[in-house]
Image (cartoon, rainbow, N blue to C red; front, top):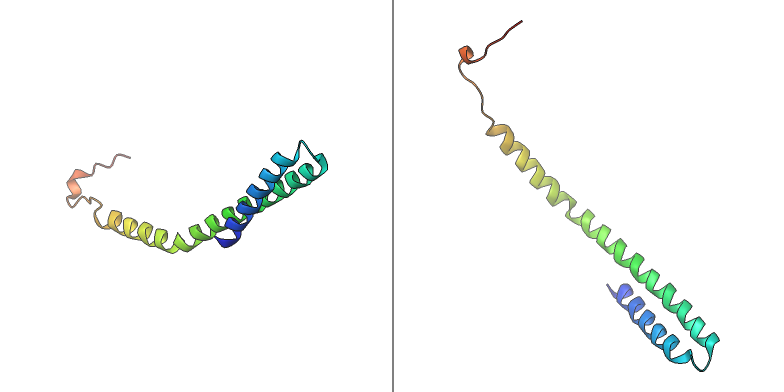
Length: 90
């Protein structure tokens, strides 16, 4: 979370700098815009990596829930005990 938050703060500050520097020095504003774009892309990538890492941390719990559900379905499956109920036609 620290890297993502730092990248977001840098992107916001660079964006504000680009906005206010545009009327006085366009090269500085363009440089700030580039810094804003790069920092925001790093923040997005870091947030995506954190989200994927969270999914992989939760994966064993999800697999456990799936296994419990499959066992429940196998145990509660209706079975016919009377062979006369089955009609086999060749």
